[in-house]
Image (cartoon, rainbow, N blue to C red; front, side, top):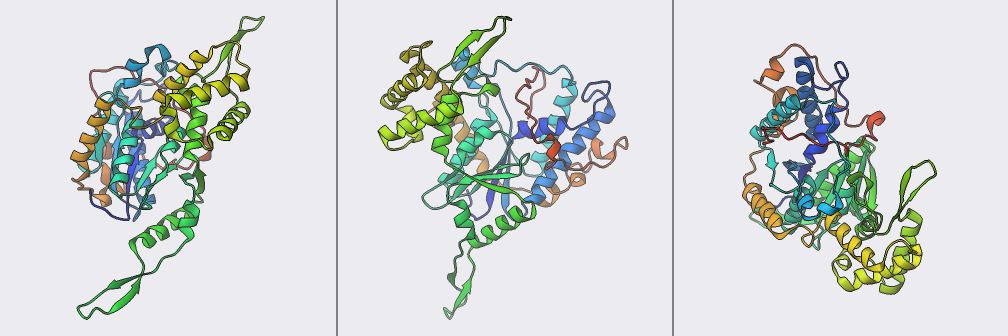
Length: 409
């Protein structure tokens, strides 16, 4: 992998597909039911993607599009009903959706975008793999997603090379602690410029990267959110994830007189108390502790005390903690070795073949040039909705794609 100050831009493909789809109009209450709808959706995808590329002009030099596959988590943890709360959305013509998304991914691939897909791996796993690989090779990474769980991947390595996460829906850049200070700092380096060894003062590539990032943040009024990833992960494991149907480490259910059953878990307030007590005993919270039986046992003991646990044994809480770590923490210790090996083998085979045509990715008509979608006159021009506030809270976690004969690239 070529080391530069520019970022590898990793897109959460699933998020972008559904985000663009659900701002489209429907025909008789159904998405993509007509030829005009199909062409409009393709133009919307190309318009939004091109806008992203222009947005990070000069900041990125490699683009990766991740594609979901059926998750290994469902096979390893069937009892957890991982994402079992998601149902097929009948308002979508899935045949047309499949055709457009397959075609769009092929158009991106043609222009040098790396299409990343591994059987058994979710997009989250792939984004983790790319971030880890780039960091190990001293290449900064910019992840683009609407999934708040991926803020756990924010990082800076020992050489100061970072992984940052951009949320287009909320106009926020999630970074490591100290990023703002790094961005404001300046550095002057001396470089040899001719055969007489004359010294010339110039700015480094890192300084150029800072300037471009600062200009982007200011122009688009993007907020910097510095994240304590260890704290974030600990609390995620404790509270679970309702969107993915992952229960809290401790919970119980109650049925009202009207027959309504409700689940009660670990609140934000109780979660903070548990973490604070863990810190008072162990001095800190670190992701690595979640893969150690002794620390898990200690955490379960604290949960029993703080929650005054009556509906679950400590042993059950220990098992729930381990389950949540495996389901929600993106790490080489949680992803099955065979899946992780396939991810890194795939990345290694693709990372050194960068033939990105940035100019053709920067505009919708260039992406679709020569295709039936651009030549079709049933739709007009589209505008990007990446920063529209009115749809910034949309959550596509309820989506479950139907199985079709055609598969994504």
